[in-house]
Length: 189
Length: 189
Image (cartoon, rainbow over all chains, first blue to last red; front, side):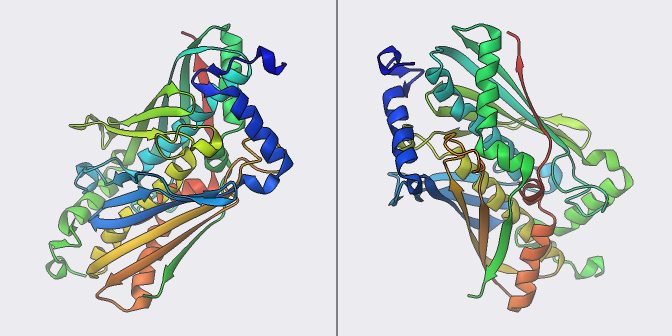
């Protein structure tokens, strides 16, 4: 596809800048090194507060104008106070968000206008794992299902292809399906 | 530890109810079957909105009084509008929240009063993976580090033991380190 064929703003995506960014990273791969971060503070019981702001990437530190606070708690049926969603739900949210975030870029690059995209992420979990009641039951989800509904100016097969490509390039999908090394340590005060 | 030795409310945890809940699930394991859910809607470009409310668990459907909205976007350096954190940051948030949520229950069960707990979760990622610029680079994080600071009425080793037990019983830590099967499908409209 030549540059003249690319709509400058399709699906809210600045397509020329997107391609220019890809070229810049291709020429200078160290721009692709990012370090993301989330800070947490315990409040009471299962209730706690996460804050997201700064990150490192494209060769420099970035500080946003505002900090996003995401709280977590357990529901009353799990002896929490239900002030906020459970961390297990926040994990599903991160997965759905990642699959959604790539979609419009891919559709724009393929010349597809999107009208409406929704998705539902569901996960089944047997809490005997985290409750320590059965060592044969894992702590995490047994399985997660994501179902998309996509409306756009392309036939069903091409719209499904956009979702499939988003899955193939999703950071969170990769981590959630494959796993990643995590170190947990306690700093001495 | 006999029931008479258990403080009824330590660290904001209703300890007798916590133990009663464990007994109830032990007697009726099907109460432990939960299905969590997150709903998503594309807004524009990389910007999208997730909603968390209802879940199934302990034998019934639960609907909360309010829906929690968690938005996601890409930063401008990644050709987004930076309306919200990236999904990759939301994943770190879910992990930190899960390790935090279990902590006070474990401390309470061990008779430890917590004063202050904070944690930082950091992840390193090479975006050449999701940008499709190098097939040898994975889409997800290369590694994630969690560092806790814990203050409480116990020696450092016992406080570290609370964090370690929270890690051993964390649903999100399990998924993020080990992976889980995820199906992604597109429903025909």
